[in-house]
Amino acid sequence: LGTPYPWLKELKSEERGLYLIHLLLTCANHVASGSLENANIALEQITHLASPDGDTMQRIAAYFTEALADRILKSWPGLHKALNSTRISLISDEILVRKLFFELFPFLKVAFVLTNQAITEAIEGEKMVHIIDLHASEPAQWVALLQVLSARTEGPPHLRITAVHQQKEVLEQMAHRLTEEAEKLDIPFQFNPIISKLENLDMEKLRVKTGEALVVSSVLQLHSLLASDDELLRKKSPLGPKNLNGTHFPRALQMSQSTLGELLEKDLVNGYSPSPDSASSSPLSLNSSAKMDSFLNALWGLTPKLMVVTEQDSNHNGSTLMERLLEALYSYAALFDCLESTVSRTPLERLKVEKMLFGEEIKNIIACEGAERKERHEKLDKWIQRLDSAGFVNIPLSYYGMMQARRLLQGYGCDGYKIREENANVLIYWQDRPLYSISAWRCRK
Amino acid sequence: NQSLQSQGPAPHMSATALLQKAAQMGSTRSNNASS
Image (cartoon, rainbow over the protein chains, first blue to last red):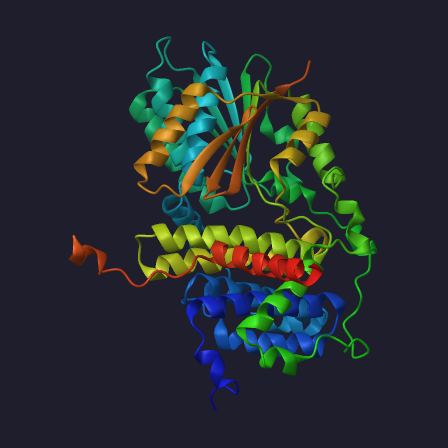
């Protein structure tokens, strides 16, 4: 037993990190071109270096490796299904991980502050207010809004919250928490839970009435509607023994500091140059999705007074594996770096967020295609184009909201997090990398 | 305060910095090759 490559163990953190990047890109190239044997060799090498509780690059590499392996395995549906057939997903785990994400990062808190301030200003003076939460998983946002509304000079409105979520338990918890708070604050309140996936949402169930001020809030959810089966028509090159002409591994094994640059250069040049079939993902063209179009059209038909959208500000919806892998490497590197430099919780909680939230997202981005690939995060400019052509007008987020958000970030005591205004909208950064976008909309008359 | 500084583990290069360095090494190499 033991590693067949003893020198790997002696690499310093920085060398190991660079080598891991090289191996990941090499492996992804092999997976993309269908040369399974070479992909397997690269995966084996990575497993000697990657580790879910190592330094940041070791951690990231562990999840990208798992994702690449999962993608390979999917070409044998029988094997893939058999290996996942007894998998248990606990709702309690999912709730826990969402909660940890809310607590460990400032992103959702900033999004909630900006959203609530936009809502408060949009419904000033309104007596009947109806808020639709397209992914109701965190009561904290609405508890905060109830508190603001109870202090309104003109008195609180009648408030109805329609909450969409696919799990009954999540909605029950939310109903309990919000009803309790509304009673305490003496605000007339109605909770309308809808147990449904967003893609199957029946608009009739929203029970929108005339005369009420309608607000829509979507947090990290709209992108899932971009998933479609259309791409299945575009066949990937099948994995098979005829495709075994990848790079030669002995060369990589003799790697020294000087050849690493060459290898990486090759990787990155290969990675960034668009392959012929990625022409459709140029920044100007939108990935059209019938599901998204009809959903936005239906929302527009309800004429909301305000819609606030929070999305991951990443480009994880490219048509080729290499494009998505590179973009995802950069974004998840930033997210894992956030945890590395700010986390004050137990190592287990950090591990859970990394594995059960980010690890699953990475797996979805890398291993899935078609309707299964839900984590189709796109940049703000694409959302602006898409919402604009669906008949919505981008409206500026409140200045007062920005002040609150800035104060919240300062309270975090970590200068890596920044928020910046981009025209009317807000981007939340880790260092120089934008990670989340928040934008507000109303219907074009 | 010296005792506070020596408490933390030696800082690792961030993953973001590693990716930047990897990309840089690539582009430096190609510049050298073309000159």
